[in-house]
Amino acid sequence: MAVTLCATLFSSTLQLNRTTNRSSPRVFPAQSSNLKSSFVLNVNSCNGLVKFSPRQSAVVASAVSGSPGIDSSLSGEDAASLLETVKVFDLNGNGIPISDLWKDRTAVVAFARHFGCVFCRKRADYLASKKDIMDASGVALVLIGPGSTDQAKAFSEQTKFKGEVYADPTHSSYEALRFVSGVTTTFTPKAGLKIIELYMEGYRQDWKLSFEQDTVARGGWQQGGIIVAGPGKSNILYIHKDKEAGDDPDIKDILKACCGS
Image 1: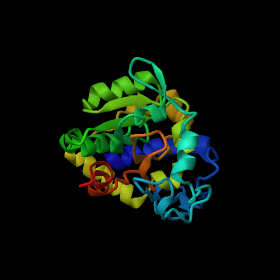
Image 2: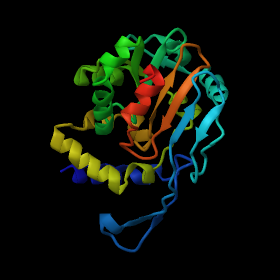
Image 3: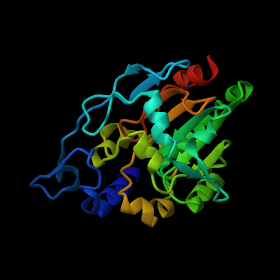
Image 4: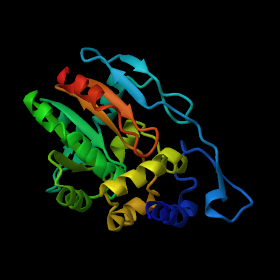
């Protein structure tokens, strides 16, 4: 069931989005008309984990490699400077600079692929399951999605997410943080297996949200990530960039960055 749904989304939007992102790996047509073999995907692997020191803006470990368009030298200072111009919107439609989310506090900020994404519903639960630990350390839990405020409201109502939810209608935060996007980062063997697992666990993709104009126009190929930042606008402690759909980092790494445990 899940594989069929993914194949439907893949075939209906691929033609429109084969060149929407300059950093996306190329897609080459093959001879067979069968969906499973109709494309040969040239996959460039990358490790999407970058960490920053809690007391410094310098990069402690940069392991992003092998992907065109990814700058592995992005420092905390650079990221903070780029994010300074980004606005996100709360569920009431109020716009705020994204760095205000961690200006006066530490925050775990998760970036969803899009508000209908089944992987992102799992990520919301995955992080919320540790919210008691975050609360005890005074750490805020935030989720940002590329899309409209109405989409963000629908996601919040459907998931009952325990943290704060914001919309990024222009995708500016994703571009500033250089999160990857592309067909071959979305449809991978590992992601396909995880979709089946999630459906067996009871998670469901919201296809109405998934096929809203903004998501379809961008192809649904955007990947997200997780950052830990603050207090202080330039104090970015940790960045995980998803290298493919469903690429959740180890929760222990997140808790160590935000709570020291």
